[in-house]
Length: 114
Length: 115
View 1 (spheres, rainbow over the protein chains, first blue to last red):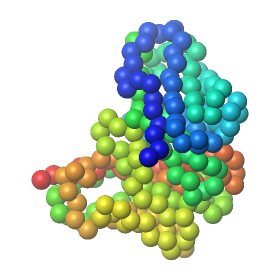
View 2 (cartoon, helix red, strand yellow):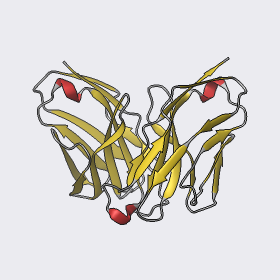
View 3 (tube, chains in turn brown, orange):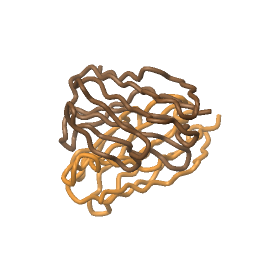
């Protein structure tokens, strides 16, 4: 089974802190995604990566950056956390850019910024 | 661009009732269509998928048929159980317009099944 693992289920950080959310997948998938999920807004894409060191901005990249130094690992970085970044963060991966390839999700990280 | 529209709910049903959750889409290319389910406190997991027109995806008693003529992929189940209570997301993948726009989700439908 494909496994996508996010480093933390729950995280509490202070305003202004630099926050790292880590995601690892174990099936050699090319694509990795970071979403945030908020009530009434569904899933919004923050960043997408289709290869090592390659990334594309999603719908809401402001205040975030990403790093993909190895194929299996995709990190989301909050440069200076703010309370409006309190949310559920979901990492996903997919095998290729073929349309049939479904996405596999991690269990999510619920981040609270105080 | 690509988009997915689904009823947001909450949808409340009694156990053993018939379920339909509507989903329609717009896409520039020839997408694959998916239904994902999210149980409380968890990430999303694939429920079923269809990769071309007239395909039917099925899993755990749920079914959905890819209707190109009506650009729809409605989710159905004949008899729901309390354990089906979850949030259901309709999604499409179509990378013809670029990677970041390639995977598009609806806003999710919260389903509540009462005993």
